Each structure stands twice: as C-alpha cells, then as structure tokens.
Image 1 (spheres, each protein chain N blue to C red):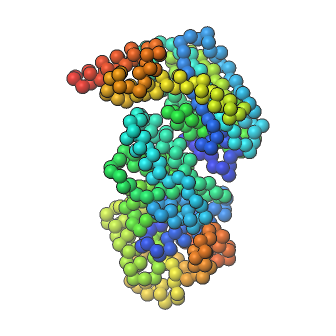
Image 2: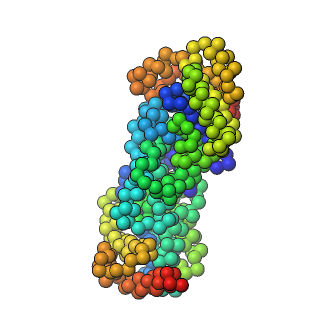
Length: 208
Length: 256
C-alpha cells in the first residue's frame, strides 16, 4: 500500500487522533441506492490544504444474487476492495473491526485537484468491477467530529451484524445460548440461516 | 523493495552503534530528497533517545495488544489481522523533518506467537520497501535483526570501539553472517569508534580481515551530547565525526 509521509502531506483524514468511521452497507433493494451519486458533507479535500479533518465514509452497494451461502464471502470481497485503491499521492490505512479509516493525500495531488469526487469515483469503479454489484453510492463526511460520531452510531447495528458474521465464520462453536451476538442473530434476518449453512459446511469438513 | 537500500548496525553493546546510527540519520535526513526510515531495534529504544524522540508505541506494544485481543476471544481473519497490524505499525511511526522512526521495543517474552511475529516482520518489510533508505540500529547480534526486523539487508555495518573485545565481537558477527547465513547482505564493513590515534587503527587493521569503512576519533562533543541527553541531530555540521560518517555512507554508495 502507498505511504504519504507528513512532510509530503496536504491533507489528513480520520487520523488515529481524530474521529473516523468507514462503513459498507449493501442491499438487494436497488431503488434505495442512487447509483453513481457521490455526496460530500463538509469541506472538499482541495480547499482543506494543511488540515487534519475527521472522516466518515459510507458506501452503499446495491447487489444481486446474495444468499446465505455467499453473503459473507461477498461482503468480505467488497470490504477489501478499498485496499486495492492505488491512487498516486493517496494513502489509506483501515481497521474493519473498529470501522476506522485513515487517509492521507499528498500535497502535490491535492494541488492538482484530488477531490472527494476523484476518490469516490475510483472507489465506485472497483465496486462496479464485481459482477454482483449493480449500483453504488458513496457518502463522505468531513464536516465535524460530531457528524462522524453520529454516523458511527447510526451504522453501529449494521456493524454488529458484520461482527456476528465474522464470529460465525471464524469459530467452530455454534452454541447460540453462550454467544455474545445472540440478540443480533435474533433480530437480523438471514443470520441464523447463514449460521446453519456454516454448521453444515463445518460438519462436512470434519467428517468428510 | 528493489530501490530501497537497507543498512544494519551491529556490534558489541556500548561501542557507539546508536551514536553512529543517529549521525547517519542526521546526514541522510538533511538531503531531503529521499524517504528515510530509521528502525530502532534496540529494546532500550536508544536510537529514539539519541534522536530526541519519545516513542509513544513500539512494535512490541502492537504485538502484545493483538495477543491480548486474541486471548480475550476476539475473532480476526488473516487479512483483517494483517490490515489491523499495518494500521497500527503506521501509527507507531514517529515522523520528523526528513525521516521517520519505528521502534521495535522489547523482544518476545510471553510464549510463542510465531504467526503474529511473522506477520509483523512482513509488514515491516513491506513498509520498509516504501522508503529509499532504511537504517536499522540493532542489538549486538544479527540474529535478532533476521528474526524480528528483516531477513535481508544491503549493508551490514559493524561498529566497534578499539577494545580487543569490541573488535572480537565484530569479527564473530561477521563470521555468523558469512558462514551461518544469519542474514543476507550485499556488503559488510567495520566502523571504528572512539579512536585515539591512527596507530590504533593500523594495529586493528593488522588483526582483522574486515574492511574498515572509517574511523571516528574520540569526540568530546558527542560525549557531551550523550552526557546531557541531548539529541545527536544537534551536533554541529562541522563535527569531524559527521565527516567520517559521510565518508562511510559514500563508500556504501548511500550518499553520492
């Protein structure tokens, strides 16, 4: 992955000292996604030269053909797409499980107009490369720590579901009564079905 | 990684490896045309101190943090773990004018977590590849550099004072590097520190096969900086020690 050091940096977004949130949400209801729309709440990157801003990013993906068998793998594939972004003068470090995303934009590319539109478009291109992604919308927040924190609160239930999927996929124990995510599975459609599929897969792997 | 030059300092404890490393960082960072990464692989974070930096997080802190999470039952996939460690390692970098510093911290001491250690070494290697010059201030031997930091270096710089023990340790390190292939390297040489006169250098030259890259005369100003705990980056540009370091770097083709 690229690096941008402070001495070459024009703008920092969501550094470990600032608030940041990055969230990927997907739905098969394509009508709820404004395909191709990039929204920025707050100042754009070029006009923030020299700043360190809080950062929020929400990617809304309209998808098709998801099932209990493939949803987890496809979610992971989409989540990891951001690491494939290879834009000159742009650095990104992220931690999925804490929803953090930290970006740096080099001074030179910022002067050349590296904007939220540029970043959002590059991200969309990657998503559109996946056959099951039908529509993508990206929303960036640079307005305030309060706004980014609020986005974190709003997206927290979705992240709980993802954390529950992560736990299912990484464990051999499918005992619901002792699982910290039981309440999440009780509420989110499809998670129990996904767990049943994983149990079957695990049993097949264990017993041949 | 192809264009990155990696220098590793080795030698007996107390011979001045860290001072030599700090002076190299000072010289290299003054040029401002290349990305410099200094890696402090000394558990006591001596290079950071010599550069006047208080380290907020070491690689060992990151390692311990991850192990604690795993022990608490946090589930992480391989790729998530890699990205988490990458984020944390970049956050641990101290950035200063002309260079960045990464402190490794204390060696592993709580059981075997080879996977975590290997991931960290891979991340450090990947990060180092984004810099033009990487300078590693190591522990006495090179095995730790191999195990904890990097499998391959370009220049192995053995540092010794004029004591028989210091030169002997440098010879042993060279032997381990050459014969046991403890680390891959392209060139290796000796920098003598705290030399009182040319005769000492001539005498050591007669006792070792090592290529002597340069020698630094006993320098009151360095001793004074050390004594007062001042950053060696503040050493005047006219310091004779700096001229020797410049010569050494030129010899290794790190400086023109």
